[in-house]
Image (cartoon, rainbow, N blue to C red):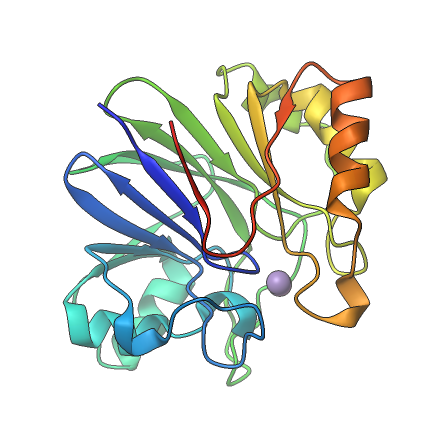
Length: 228
Ligand code: NI
Ligand code: MN
């Protein structure tokens, strides 16, 4: 079984696994790095890490058009129901659920989560995704460094997807410390270069990952994909 993982710019990823199409944090409208329009997005499931506009993004429109089930924290799931979505699945931190494409567990994330209209978006999360073939992906979403990333790493992470943009999330220095805690086989940087305030040199970051950790850094351009 192979899983295709495509970076769609910012924190947005598309996963194609076990016959399901999954979008994570589908922010296309207003995203200068977006490689597709919301109207083109395909999804069976949408995962939303927190309430900020650059992560909720176009989720409501895409879910209404595609009929995708949206997975997020309980507060955001309730907010999505108020927006007219019926196929929502609320979870909370530390809780996992066996979805048709694999298991999803919500992890801690240190960040905010207010929704675009000011509603309470609960607490922000990352995602630990257990694929059907046993491989594990950790999408950290927006977070600072925290020591319990070591516990996530104890599960044996094949691919970590980590922010490196600084200012709103971890920057390059703390992302290196995160990689040392998580010890993933591979790591993809996200949440950088979308806006000038989070500009980073991803190639310099990749050189540091190679020199200072045992992980393989994979720097994608928006629209590029890997298979796992
Ligand atoms: Ni955010
Ligand atoms: Mn963000």
